[in-house]
Amino acid sequence: MAALFGATVTQAAAQTAASRWYKGNTHTHTLNSDGDSTPDDVVRWYREHGYAFLVLTDHNFLTSVDGLNALHGADQRFLVVKGEEVTDQFAGKPLHINGLDVNAQVSPQGGVSVVDVLQRNVNVIRQANGVPHINHPNFRWAITREELLQVRNTTLLEIFNGHPQTNNAGGGGVPGMEEIWDAILSSGTLIYGIAVDDAHVFKQPGRPDVAGPGRGWVVVKAPRLESRALLTAMEHGDFYASNGVELADYEADARGMRVSVKPTTFSKYRIQFLGKGGRLLSESLEPTATYQFSGNEGYVRARVLESNGTTAWMQPVMVPARAAGRQEAGAIFLVALAVIGGLIQAIKRPLDARPSTTRT
Image 1: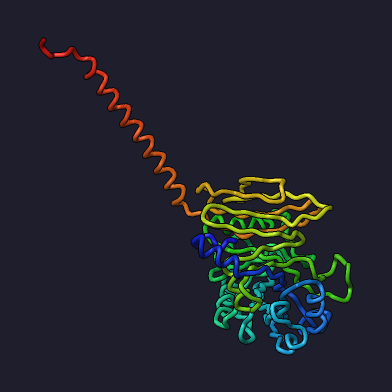
Image 2: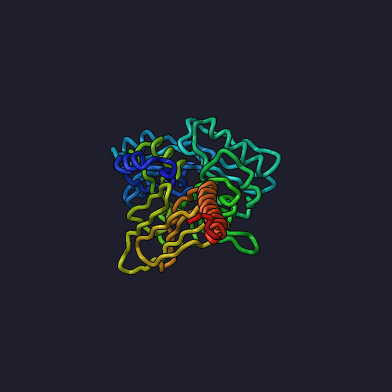
């Protein structure tokens, strides 16, 4: 995974051996804001549908999770994490940021611009010991790519939101969320992409035009099912996002990235590796693919495209430019050696051709 990039082989092996994958959702609503179901019913849905953790994120409301964990929680099986969708606006634009595991309710801070509002709310979430993630930038076309590029102190961005009005693919000249993600990464800012439900409606199952559950999630590799362990792993990129594809495994180290899909009998897959500017670096039609870093990619991220329209997104690894520099220096050194060798041979040939001055 991305966080293993800077680790030694021994550290990476130890971390991998000690960790497990946990499926979860970090954006869900209840009757405490604009959802249609009680916290108990919402938590029950996720537990019964194979999730390992759920963050409740009602608008400007911090739902207590102690009783929910007493009723539904199970050690290393299921966990409810407290959270809040800090809901603000500027000039009529909805500006929403989730605060994961905040220690108290956070009030929206306002501001004098879109960027100012976002930054103030990110900062206050951090002050509440929470982890922020910026929600659905293309919802009502609220946040531009240029504005997102200016926000600091956050590592998580929704690149897929299951609400039917969030315009994940962009349109009308506005870029989609993957294109925006690549623009941020190409600027040199490392940010990780998450997928969420943003579920509001649990009482109308199967309706595609409402914000139902089960549409987007993350799968986090962490040493234990505990809120801080999960969020620390996410802030280090130790997870993948999906709206349908399941992976068998994926990992990255200083040399490259490996992705392995858990295939189904009714699907085919394309594993793609992307670099700076969203450039396609490599593609494989096999269920397992490996990409070796060359040093000139800027960053590398992978995605899996499934034949029925679902996707999994792996987290980016920034490839240091110095890797390319070492390769170029090595090449220059070899060329220099060849040139010097040629000069020595050129000088030696005339000397060898001179008449001998030895007397007999």
